[in-house]
Structures are given as structure tokens and as C-alpha cells.
Length: 361
Image (cartoon, rainbow, N blue to C red; front, side, top):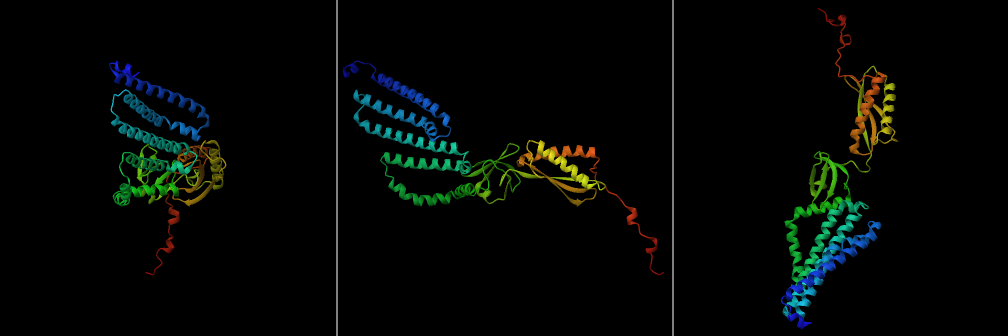
């Protein structure tokens, strides 16, 4: 066989062709096997085996390249196309490739594990950005030390100097670390969670999109994003409209004329309120609504009707539907909602003539 190779005009092309065929064949086999295994596990949803299979694609591609590096080395050495002195470099390159494949697998597995189980755990859902960032940093750090050791670089001085270096880094990155630990505090204490509708002390309102390692993203109703540093958010007053539950009361202020029969007004208003709570898709049908009269105003007697909505954002639609229905019902019942009125009562303010000048002349 070696004699045959001596008569081949372009042995490098033959070796390259064989390696290319090997790479293509292994890649096709890998893809076929993974597709078949994923189709078997697809019905199991978030099973760890499915996550494991989804994490194997890129690491296996790197591993295939490493195997073919060894194949290329073997063919070149067997047919004396390169010198033996390159063996060590090839071995180091292949080892680094295997380490990178393991690091990629670990990073993808941790990432998909957190994402897959985030919906079933409040802790994971709120802290997935922090966990994914921290795990990625850890994997890269450990992998870098292992690669340095593979290259023959002593990592003992590096590990020994980490104490002094970490102090300098902590001082330089104090704002970043403050935001990071504030984010961890938000995740553990859970004053806000991903998906909650909150109002900041600066007045912005919106849904919590993400609690990251540096900042928290809040999506406002106009479809804009407010990015709040975690350190500032943890020290701010925040109203969480989804805690302890999403349901909330919706007060509606109403005023009627002084000549109105208040018992009749209360009865009609409660009928309309109960009808809206039963018929509206975001109303709480079993809520015991009530009316409270509270003010003798300048032109009306004012009271508050208490409704109940499924969540904060729905309260606008509940209130709008109730006002329209109440206005139509008042018109049918002859109940007057007065315009602002100023009445001058001259009879009440009139003084008796006999009491005006009582002093002796």
C-alpha cells in the first residue's frame, strides 16, 4: 500500500478527500441519530434526557472535528507526509478541542435546563438571567484554567494571585457587584416577579420582563422598556399590583342630585354593578359589590361604587363598561347626575329689619 502512495501525484489531496468524506459521514450519522432520539423523547416534554439530546449537537460537531484531526495525523504520519515532531502540537490541539466540546455541552445543558424548568418554578423564572450568566462565567473560568494547564502553563500562581486580584476587581467593579447582589436579593426576597405589573416611585407602570444580573427590565403599556439598575430598584418604593393576588378592587365615584331618593339610587346602582360583574369577561361575578355615600358636595351627593376586576390592566375596561351602563340606567330611572351648580339662597341669608339697628340713637 505504501508503494501505491509513492506513485500518487497529489497525496495531500487524497488525504484531504478521505478526511472530508469522514467528516461528512460522521456529521450525517450524528444528525440522523440525534433526530431519531429526539423524536422518541419528544412526547416527554421537559424530560432531562430531551434536554441532554438538545445540548449534544454542537459538542458532537466539535468532537467529530477532533477525531478527524487524529485521523489526519495518522494518515500523514503513516505515509510520511509530515514529521513526527508535530505529534505533540496535534495532541494538544485535540485535547483543547475536547475541553471546548465539554465546556460547550455544560453551558448549553445548564442553559436549557434553566429555561425548560423556568415555567414550573418561580425562583427559576425570576432568576434565570442571573443563573444563566453566573453558570456561563463559572464554566468559562474553569475551562480557561484547564486549557492553560493543558498548554503547560502553571495555574498555581494564577490561583494564588486571585485573592489580591479579586479585591482589586471588587473595588473597580463595585457598582456592577452592587447591582448583581441587589438582583440576587430581588430574586430571593421576591418583592417583584417576572410577569408582575408594577408601578415605580417615579410613576412608570409596566410588566416585569426580566430580572437580570445588572438591571431589571419593565415593559410599559405604550410598548416601551424601562431599564432600572437593580441597586436603585431594591431601594425604591414599588407597588406590585399582582401581589398577593391579581384581583383588585375598582372604585368608581358617582354623584347624584340632592333631590334624588338615595335608597332608590343605591338599589339601581347595585343592580347595574352586579350585572356588569356577571356579564363582563374580566369581572369577578361572585364579588359582593357595595355602595358607600360619603360627601355632600357643592352640587351633588357623592358616593363610591366598588367593583372587582381580574387584574390591574382590566380595571379600565370594567370601569368604562359600568359608567356607560349606569348612565343609561339612570336616564331610564329618572335619576339626575347634576352639572356643577351654584345656587344663591336670598331667603336664607336675608336679615330681619328689626334686628339690624338695635343700638340707641
